[in-house]
Amino acid sequence: MGIQSILDRKGAGVITIRATETVKSAADRMRARSIAALVVTSGDAIAGLISERDIVHAVSAHGERALAMEVRDVAPQTIITVAPGDTLKRAMSLMTSHRVRHLLVFADGKLVGIVSIGDVVKHRLEDLETESNVLRDAYIAAH
Image (cartoon, rainbow, N blue to C red):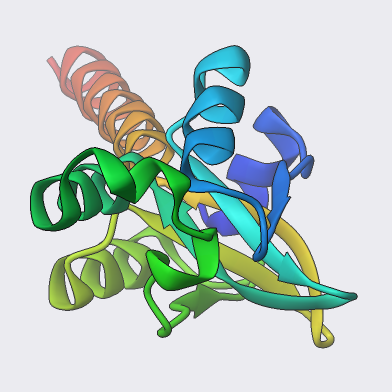
């Protein structure tokens, strides 16, 4: 199972926020949608990703005034991406090595979705359960 299978199940919808909007607006949008990250846009370009974690770090560093800051001043500059054909193992490796919980999915230079660590873990557990069932059935059939 790979990244495309996650997108097939959860959909490719991505919620965005403009880089010039406030951190408070980002937090409000995340709460309203029950999500943990937003894709940051600047015009038609993808400018980054802001997560709940980034907001907490900003509040810790800047206090209450962080909520009035622009998203672009809080969102990390580095964007970690995967392709629809990438494996869950690659996604897990990228998340671990870059210490991120969300990956943007690009195909042919276009944003086609976002996957979270929760999506990856859920699908990996389903893979392991399927493997376990196949091995159990094979064992039963052999005896």
